[in-house]
Image (tube, rainbow, N blue to C red; front, side, top):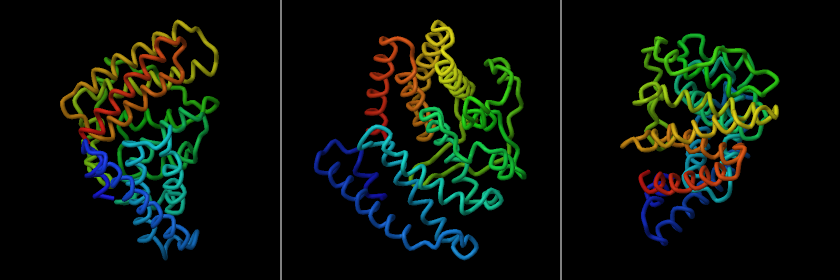
Length: 282
């Protein structure tokens, strides 16, 4: 898979073809290993589950960078989710499972908003137990709300930038430093992270407003704010891989839920432009 990632950004058709070939080979081996895993024997197979989780995340990230179809990375996310469920919420308190759990929450928040279907990560057990020995940041609390469906949305105060800036962020090093292939950064360690949180909050509100058929003017205002903030973030000289994916995901949701065709077109064009730039810089 490392060879596949290295070949992907090259502006050479043969190298890109080789990247997809390596990806296909890795996927085939991964599926074979999944079939060999005996389900629900967690204590005997934690090492095997960890290896499978790391491979699932690598495949997921490849599909995010070079999707073969719209949202083609979703099956990898659900596959990783099934493996994580075997580890259990208590098992996710410890490294390296916590880091994988934390990163998967990040990705599954987009899946939940896109499909409007809640996974077990939105349950109270999975929101609390893995974090028992680690302090949640404001970003983590926002992800909590994104993992819930509309009927179970937690009633929280509206987070404006001034409110967020006044909150004391946790300085505990949670080790969110590496993914399967790329360096992955904690959003609260990224310049302008308040804007990242605001984008996520606005996306959540846009999806919720769309579901309830509320005032189209508010949906239009939210869409405009998301696109403007996303553009500012994507213009940063060095945007971490996972943050870039989340922002492009936000733009994709604007293309899906914006109330007028012009905003949908603008979001779709920005998504395509940024996706191309992101792959080339990956």
